[in-house]
Image 1 (cartoon, rainbow, N blue to C red):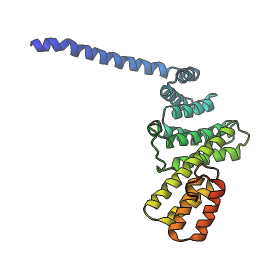
Image 2: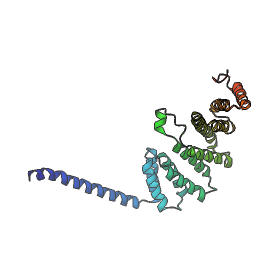
Image 3: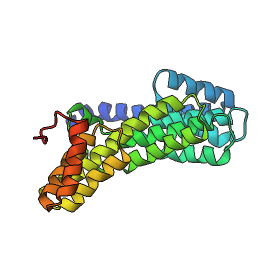
Length: 254
């Protein structure tokens, strides 16, 4: 009985706390349910201003559901896209981006939607831990980077005067380098396994598709080495000539 008397206040306190939390949550839900569109939007904007994008997304999602055709609807959808992006929810962001583009193809901010699609896909391909630890994982699947590249290209082609076009072009160059590094990583994998035809083809692909990337020298070196192993002297000499002209400091020369 003594032990029960000692535990009873603790248990009772826990029950009171849980009841209090439950009551508080219910009151909060009632308050939110009684808010108008402008009040909800102001609340979401306050959350965004302090960096609480998860809370902002939750409020904006409720606002979008309750007032889908109000005067704030388009801005709500755009802010919801950004909040999902910033809170690390790419799938939700992409779904809302695609919905906005589908329903508002002629909206003045549709270029922003394409831009955010590119940013979201680009972010999905990054790995913050690997970047911090400087771990090179060029061989990871680049499908999201390809999607981002296509998103930015579509933005530039359809809206060349967009205020996001310049940044999109810069990001496309970065993505090109990412895709080229992937091809080089695969080429080196083939080299290790004596698959020289496949390795040379990967190198040539980089030259043809990413000539403005930082991986051209590596591509030419792989081609020289592969053609040497295959006994294709003419192709080797052509690759060596190009390497010598453009990268005279390469270790492969001489």
